[in-house]
Every structure is written in structure tokens, then in C-alpha cells.
Length: 505
Image (cartoon, rainbow, N blue to C red; front, side, top):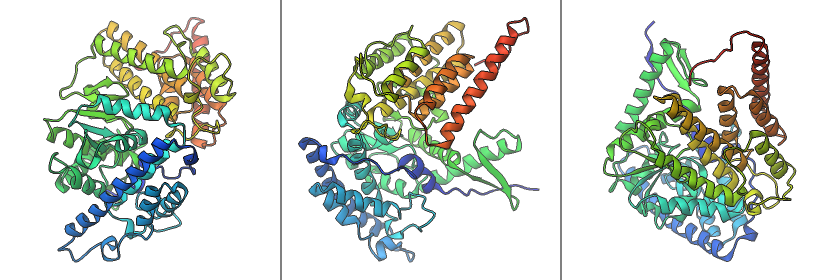
């Protein structure tokens, strides 16, 4: 039977899981404790974004001027909360602003809400300034802003003027947007969400800001990315080589794809087109979701990556040493100058339990403002708080070292890269042992290296956080089960049986 290609992906709802916090618990707002300076800066940010939203409404009207199928956001106007939302932010009435946002968010096209249909009056490019203002506010008020501001300011200082910045994490995107002199003007650099490129309204938003200075994706580019993804999927489907977590099936003779992984692969292809269509610009990446085409191009660059124009056969010793020095500095400030090459996983797990589970800061030599990620000393969700943000960033770099070790040409290079990956993972776990990406990647790394006792230690430490998420609980149990079984096999092999080595990294 012939297989025709059709894609069925709830793009914006799925992207929202990564970008806008779909299904997240209500954040703890600490606006009453904002410093006068930060309060003033946030109010000015809301005023600038208010002006941008007004301009975007006019852009939308011009875009649909000759269309007989105008959206309700034009024929009926935007949802009634939009302009009061901005005005509340400009006045510093943060509780009222947050109330308006939540009312809109439950009806926005970017959120999955099974009990309520999307409000078409929010289907507008003007939704982006609404979302950006609240998400920046959320980043800066759900936890102590000291290190989050330092994180954002470090990125702002390290990315050259006129560069393109793929922002993947919430912190990377919304803090740089907040700190920019003028994000709509690409000043000091162009900010593009890594996770929303399959969203048509997001692309219209990018074009409205940057089309005069950047080659932004056209509708033809988007369609080409969809077709390229589906052709690759078709081949892998026929060869029974689907990626873990990939959802594809034949329905009525057609290959149909759905799920977050499909969306992110399409985003990746669109990002690749942006990269190749703008050869005169430097590119930088704040990685949320690994993009395969970037792997050989990524160079650690502070908290983020530089995306080299050409693939790099190897990372030089200078790059690796500079990266380690950067992170040693920040790790020492944050959690103390005790983590070295010789620090065991047991010691790191002991530190994590004492500091983050028991909240015991006796003999702690770091900065309490870093580990006390929430004002009421409760771990906030792993997309908020400086400790989670730093940990996620360090994990992304560790993952690059790990990936490069798998393709290393010499034993010496492989050994060095695995040492760097190991050290970076240990730093990431010390910085935030409840960060989900850090937990999963560190555990997988230890299992692949056949360090079963260390994997069990990490899994049990994670379990002590009383995780409410069933998937996280299941993951901890799975690591313990796998590591325990492998350790038992290793003990059996010590009696003289050959030791299985698995696939060579």
C-alpha cells in the first residue's frame, strides 16, 4: 500500500510545554519584595512591550487587509484583558497584572486546556509581548533575582552585537528579552525562540521585528522543513528505526506524526535554515532541546554555546580549559570551592541531601542566596530559580563533551572528554540536584560508563526530594533497577565469566 505523507501535529499546544509552562503549578509571586530598581525596570519593560503590542495590532491589520477571512482578533479586537494587563504592569500592580495574565493564558492558543476552547481574540502576534512580559516577571519574582540577573547579564555581555541568539530555555529567552536595549530592534542582538519556530504566529512576530535585517523563515521555508521531516520519518518508519519517544503510525493509508519530538525536529530544521540563510551573522545557542545538526558546531561559551560556522573536528584544550575555569568560578561563588576532580559522587550526593533536602547550611561555604532558590526555602519548579537555570546550562555543556567522546578518534581524546563530561555533570548536580534534565542525563551517563553504584547513589538522592511527578518517580525506580541488575551481573562476572561491555561510546 502506498504511503502518503501527512503531518498532524498540535504545534502550539506542544511547544507551550517547553516555552510557556503549560500545566505548571501557580508560581510563587514575591513582587512585594522587589527592589525599587527592579520594580522600576519591570514597569518600563511593560511600557515598551505595550507600545510593541499596539504596533503589532496594526501589522496584523495590514497583513489581513485584503483577506476575506480575517481573524477575530482583527474583526472583534483583542481579548478585553490585554490592555488592562499592560497598564497594570506599567503601574506596578503586579497582583492585578498576574490575574489578567492567567485569565488570558487559560484561553491562549499556546496552552493546552481541555476544558476551554482557545480564544481566537488572542490569536495574534500581540500575544508574544504579553507572554514575554509575564515570563520575565515570573523569572525575576519566583526566586531571588540576584543570580538570575547575573546569568542574563553575563549572556548579554558575551554575545557580540548583531549576533543571532537561539534562546531555548525560559531564562535564556525571557531574561535576555528583558535586559535588551531594544529586543524589537535586535539591539544588542537578535533573539529567536528555539522552541517556537513551527508556530506560524511566532514566525510572523519574528518577521515583524527582524525581516529588514535578517533573513527570516518564509512560509516556503516552513513547508520545506515539514516535508523534509516527513520524508526522513517515512524512511525511518519503513526501516523500523524510529527514535525513542517518536510517535508515527499509518492511518487511512497515510503516515501521520504527532508528539513533542516531531515538533522539535521541525523546529530544528527551521533553525538550520535560519543559520544557513544568514552567513554574515554569528550565532549563539541557549540550548533547551538538543539539535542534531549543531552537535559538531557547538563551542562552550560561558553559560551558552557559540555555533561555529563550520563543523569542528575537535574541541581544543584551550576551549575546554576556558570552559572549566568559567564554571569553576561560578560554582565556587554559588555552592563553595570544594568540588574538584577527586570529589566523589558520594560526597556530592551527601552535599545535595544536606543542603537541598535537610536545608542545613552549617559549614556551607557558598552563597545562601543561590541555594535558597525560593524565598520560602522550597524548591521551585525546575524552570525557575538560579540553581536550576545554572544546572541546566552546565548539563547542556556536559552533554556536548559526552557526545564528542563517543566519536573521539583517539583513546586520549575520548578519555579527556569523558573526564570533562563527568566533572561538568557533577558540578551540575551540586548546583541543583532537582533539575530534571540534570538528573536524567547524569544518571544515563553513569549507567553508560557502567558506574552502577554511583548511579544508584544519584537515583536515591533524587528520590529523597519527594518527587510528585510520577514520571520522575518511575525514572528513579528504573535507574535503581537497571543499576542494581547490572551490578549483580558484574559481581557474577567477577567469578570468571566475561564482562559485557555494551556498545562502545
